[in-house]
Image (cartoon, rainbow, N blue to C red; front, side, top):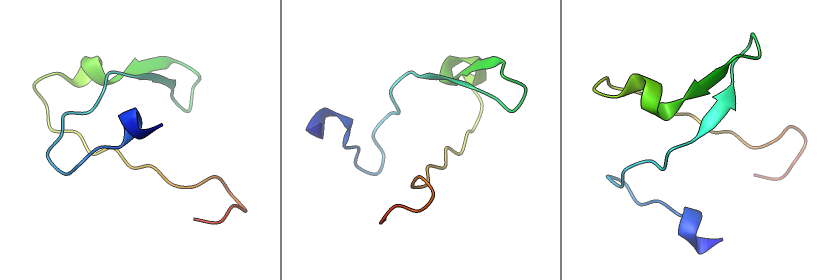
Length: 47
């Protein structure tokens, strides 16, 4: 699990997720642009 721990300034790993329209969006789609990636804990979990 420690391979997923990032420090400030580390490059984000490549990933693909579904958007609100269930279309795939990859981090690489935004190459050369500034991107903010926000993660939040799953509902009703400690964190």
